[in-house]
Length: 431
Ligand SMILES: [Zn+2]
Image: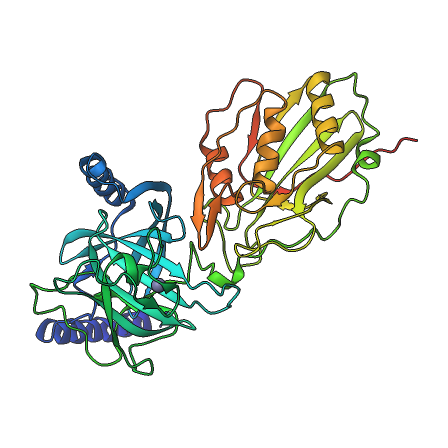
């Protein structure tokens, strides 16, 4: 009985699939995004290597490309992904990324730069977008107001340098040394309808990034416009989410906190990293871990103390510097850690450093990751310190640092945990 039923079902299914297959055969599916394809990670890196090596001698525009930061981001209305790599140019006030995609079976890379307006602290992005080749030659650009594209830039005709003395709505008068895209690229702008269907908040059309000419398949119709969320940085972190908060549990007196250790004896140091996204080099995410955190724990016999370095108030790329405070990080979640034994001299160094610490917190130059790296340095351990850039700043960060710890060669005596979990609890008392 059962077998007959199964057989019947099988015949019906076979018939159906035959019909479906037949239909497809007659009317081949035309995917709207068949002109673009995700570039495999190795292909992308190889492509960038070739490009940057061949251009390095003559290229004064692109100053750094952080291939370790490569991550894949969604393209709206497409199943393909955009490879995104942090980069730096000679313009310090710009936030730049290299975008790699296969267009008509050819790997294409552009440099995408954001120059925010001078008002700052806007939750929505206002400023300029610039798309160039890796040498800085203009391809396209937009003016953005509250995350909507309001104008598209076009290159001026033979009027080089005439824009000096003109004024950018976002950056004021054009001057030498300005980061302004409008001024430095000699542009004029064409107003675009910010309410058109293709103008999705915080998105640029893929056709605005790459040249689609030379193919009849290149056009996009109606609301099928493929676009990329430029505010999204490394797995979804957006410009508004880059805030480093003060610790949940702050340490009022670090000397008191660390006083139980016997400074004439050795101890064990563990460096924990909570990455924004586990096993990913992104500096930020809109997920719960935000910018992540790097912190340490010291264990000596029954005594354990866990702590990390924080801004006393909140810090953001627009207000990166301020007084610091230590936070109690016992039982905090982490993604990767390393541990090693330290002698009494190193223990002394660490405790004295914490007790006498005076430098301000600075999101770009002295954040939780910098603190952890300098603490390891006090024990004679040099840890990798990869740098990333983000809108209006850049520096060490738990995402890139965590990846570097995963990938580093372990010195003898050092152990590593790459599966993560909860950090140590504080333990042990003294009087
Ligand atoms: Zn400007």
